[in-house]
Length: 166
Image (cartoon, rainbow, N blue to C red; front, side):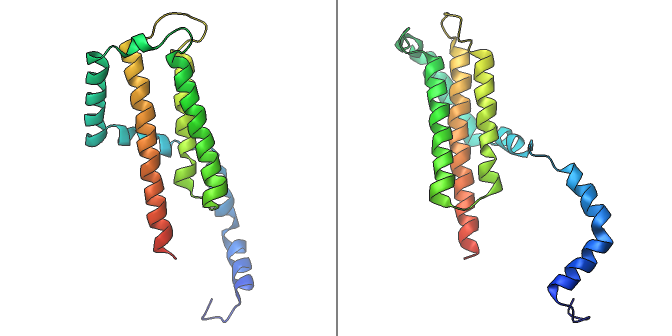
């Protein structure tokens, strides 16, 4: 562009004319949904500090009888859906009104929250009135706490990245 003394518009038109086929081909590869955040979340769940937290959480659920605090008026299923809705609302308002700037990695953590929601619908049946097992209680507690820790980690990365360019 500098050697030919072209302005940006002319250089861009020339580039698009030459590379149009490759750009359109790459455009078809992109999808609205990406598995990358879920892969990163699963890798985060098996990190040493989160695994140590998971062991302590498992021991806590086995040592204390947590299941007895859930009554027919307040069940674990309702607590999980309430936490998921709270996290969704927090993310929505945090992105929309506080950040006012988009960041792909932080926004795509919502897909992880959606996956946890669908898993809890699959495993915590709402129409059956049976008590929840300690294993199910542990798994969903671990996933939710892991999600919150992952979300905080992504926000810290975002803020470090954002202030590097100001």
